[in-house]
View 1 (spheres, rainbow, N blue to C red):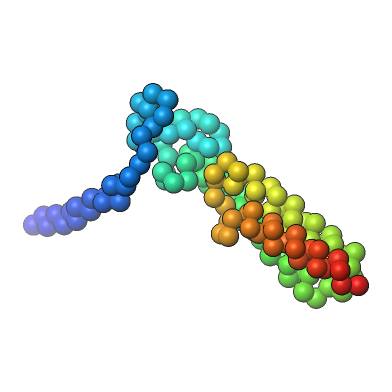
View 2 (view 1 turned 120 degrees about the vertical axis):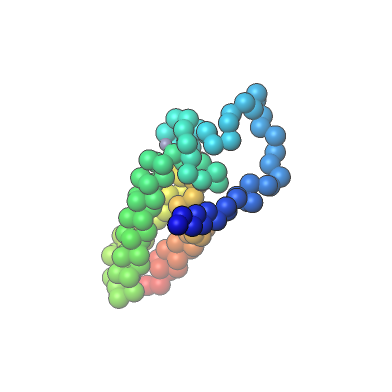
Length: 132
Ligand SMILES: [Zn+2]
């Protein structure tokens, strides 16, 4: 008895209005240039635009930088020393700035995006400076 339950799930998501490719536009749908290493290859996701390798590497890096930021933010909560506070904020902002470089290349890392985080962090840093 071979009950082949092949649930034919067809990707209905592929039907979206897509602008016509510019500059020749002969690239096959699944092959695209990786935003990070610029090699053409199979992309896991059309929206992210990274090859499998870079996708994993950048996701891992983003994860670690977010951890550093969270750690520093936690540190800030119980910190009274302005000099230490400032150092923590600088550390946090440095992480966001690095992630911003990815955002500039349309590579998503954090949600909200690094540019938003950076704005918030810089405002908070200013506020921390103001409190004496
Ligand atoms: Zn790549």
